[in-house]
Image (cartoon, rainbow, N blue to C red; front, side, top):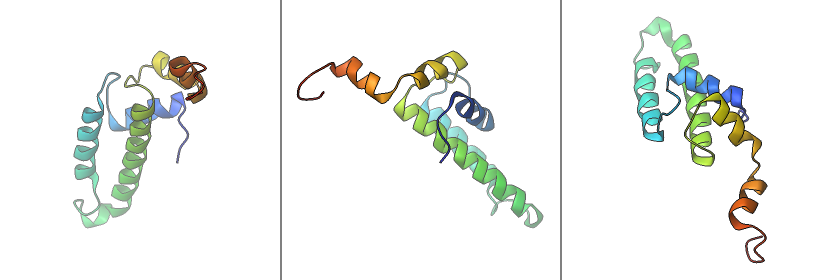
Length: 104
């Protein structure tokens, strides 16, 4: 599993060809369309290796973007990605729950 870094998120968005403000549903639709195009069973017999490599790259990019979208934000703009990656889960928790004795 590739770590969530700003460069990895940008590269994954480029591989799938999604814009900076793409929603999770748009990412899913784009991924499914590209997988249908590049799946080894759909390609001609001679293209199986390159189709498999493309499918693996698309799946890795999709998984990374879904993790980013579900755990952080939906913007792929460089400034937004860098800002969300700087904030740790502990800082997020403190920001929302503070020093609550039950949740803190």
